[in-house]
Amino acid sequence: MKIEYFGHSCFRIISNKGTCVVTDPYEGVGYDLPQGVLTDIVTVSHAHFDHNNVHALRGARIVITKPERYVFDDVIIEGFVCNHDENEGKLRGKNVVFTLQTDGIKICHLGDLGERCSKTLLEKIGKPDVILIPVGGTYTIDALQAKEYVDAIQPKIVIPMHYKPKDGALDITDEKPFLTLFDAVIATPKNEAIDVRDYVIDGTRILFMERKENA
Image (cartoon, rainbow, N blue to C red; front, top):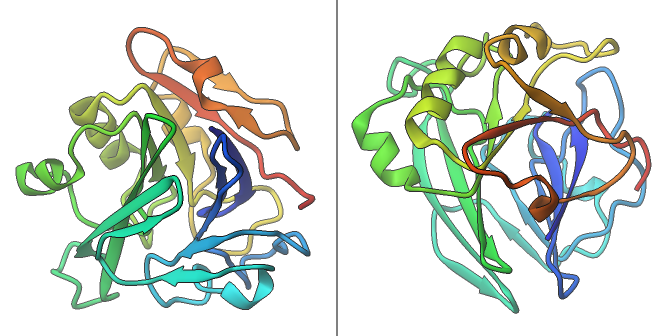
């Protein structure tokens, strides 16, 4: 399995068989989604502009917005609903967390998770191998809250998302407050897809991915 990061909360996950899943395509964040990103499946955690720019993608055969179970060739996707804020969704609505399984690996994309870590949420998340977690605060959990999730879940790989790069326009923090909470962080090669298995070790590894600027 390979993962590419296009910025904000948008990743492309590619199975060994070649099935592509793109998460939360964006617009209006200060930089553009690369043109011509090809995919088979799109997951949308919620209907805000910076997560649901589905029309910018090519080839999508399924757009998943509901917390149901989907099977597409060699990929299984499941979801559950949580809150976009700490006031039971009254401020920003609901958010769908999606888990994706393929090639013997389980990835959890937490979308715009806004709730603090709780036993109930941890039971729903389960034990994924990889978590894609928001860290920028303001509209989601912040760095310290994200670390609580990391410590509780103890996945093999953690990839921060929804942070503000130098050319970002949203009122969120950059990645530094989150990364400084950990002793060792691996920066992956820019503009390259990573093979998840290349980074698995005993314990949890934090991977920092800069956004890929081409499709």
